[in-house]
View 1 (cartoon, rainbow, N blue to C red):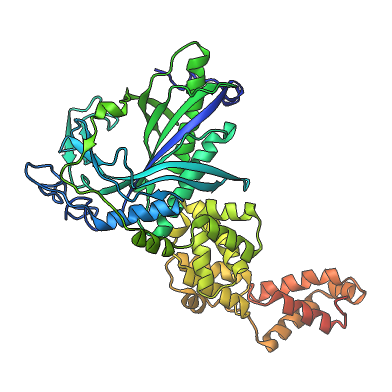
View 2 (cartoon, rainbow, N blue to C red):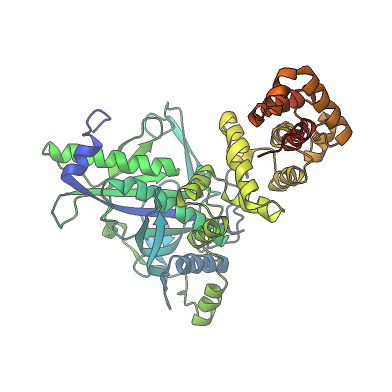
Length: 504
């Protein structure tokens, strides 16, 4: 078995070989009931309480197709620029596995509902890469196995296993790419960008939350290498159920280095499934991979074919929302920012929060400033995602409103945000409790300016002599006296007026 020490450098691997990838993404659909029965799909129920004769595969139980599941599949296919089949059917994929109680999975084999599409994805530098889609097909999820008694949570070394069939039968869409070639050294980055773009697309369609950390979306990374100049693909490995964007990229990168090490030493790649390990960023062997014929596919006799009318398909097409890439390009133009700035917003998970803040009344520049500045810093320090912070877009918009009206300056606004995050209430409550409003009383400001001038006669003389830059020292004195609650620009105006000096 190849270990982390049996790798060639990434650069050496790419000098000799061209990577070929195939990505298979499984998405759990957000339907209320399972794909072929009426059992609930709600999370968190006691094990084996959301089952029935159909999803347990008991004799005589007849499945019925979930119409919302079919509709979701068509929407996904359309958003991926696929052809939608006029007629397709389900098949039985036969294999024995403890968490599939029927000993077959109801899936689609040679007749998927959507096929021949593509998805354009943007890389870190703004370059667009087109990933071609082979198919998107409907199927059902398996149950969940929990292996007990071992050190790793895997079946090896476990004393026994527990099976929960609540998840068995939940609707899945499997989206399969065509072989991805031509990415070269950027192949791992392309893999990550594709899964990220696909996740955003799924969410925009409203067919799934696509939360990878909850298993609602997971990716199998197929990878092979072929020598430079060759035309025939190499033998592939399939790293199963990778569940984060970072891990998709790391798994592809590791497999490129592992394959290159095996091939460069004269070895042979085994077609197999592999497991990805988050702690080391490495993969280990799972089982020898079956070919399609090993599953003995045959048409599902208990389900009628699916034949979506063209009128229905076109109605669904007309109802598609603005897709993520189109939306990002539109917003980038509207906001007047660079592709790099937009990428930073995406990486921070701030796009929807900024849009919601603008919708709540903030201007675009202010919304970006606070989410990408003070709030991003706070999220980073607390180890949270931006959307996990205890502040809403509406509250951020209110802070920007208070700044725009002159009631707060930036320093005070940061204190208000600090108070909101600490649970002290909304922005207005924090302002009142902490006494944070800008001192706008002209009398109080004038008195503070007079005091600063009287206390710094040397600085005042320099300003009278034409050194306007020296006014900063007096502004600082006034800001200190007012605990930062004065408008610095207005303070400077008053100082120069008092000393009979103009700005120029």
